[in-house]
Amino acid sequence: MSHHQYHKEQNQTVKKIIFAFISASLASFHASATVVEIRTNMGSISVNLFDQDTPETVENFLEYVNSGGYANNVVHRLEPGFVVQAGGFTYNNELPLDTIATGTPVTNEPEFSNVRGTIAMAKQAENPDSATSQWFINLGDNSQNLDAQNGGFTVFGQVIGEGMSIIDEISELPRFNLGGAANSIPLIDFSADDAKNGKEPTEENFVLITDIVVTDSATVTNPDLNPTPNTQINNDDGDTPAPPSSGGSSGGSMNPLALIFMAVSAVVFRRKLNR
Image (cartoon, rainbow, N blue to C red; front, side):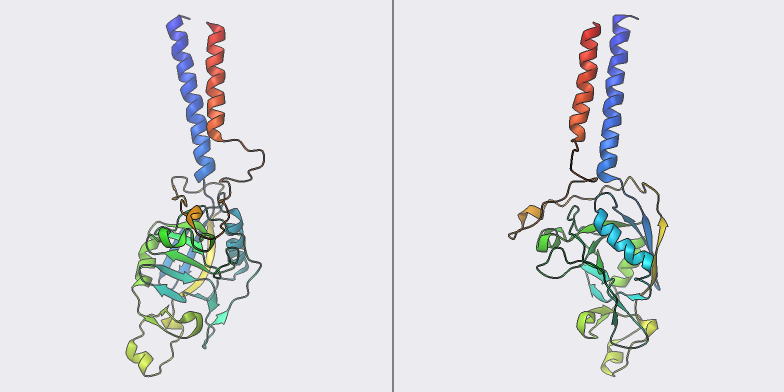
């Protein structure tokens, strides 16, 4: 083998190693799994969940999904240009709305930014680790408002496909005050005159979530998604938790870039020995 040919093959080997490690690193940072479908009376919305980056939040959400906790749920809050919120109440043929049973609050995981099309957990004021069943979908870029407030609101998934067209239709519905948490609730085919005349909305008037189901539980789904990281979390005036390490446990882990450097160094060292 000629000296030139030898170096050419070695350079190709280095490039392959770098490409392989970069690909593996990106996969560990941005790989996502589990797609769920939010089925409503206005259409279905597919959401890709960020299992690897917000594992506790996704597990918490899927517990409600798998137990049927979101069946017959009501979209109870709409703030145009801000959020559409659900996950807390059901309609059982009479008002007020019923509160769904909730489990243990989940630990906050403020990895990603509250930009348009992301789904995040709602929680109690001044209590970062208080999220249970309620979630919201961001209608706009709410990063400046929500990424640092109250420890940062945990984004755990992203609407995919044509789902935001359904969310946008919901956001254009008129809102009404039915009291309590439903003081800004969107209603279908219900007018201000109806409210003025004391008419009570029925099942046909609510934006109902008939169910949320898992449609793809593959190890990795939609790996092309590149969620925006939360860069505001440490700018809050209060005591906020540091973002957890991306892609799993931090114990004994090594920065992928360090692995790339080590691999390339090994090849270069080998080349020197073989000269």
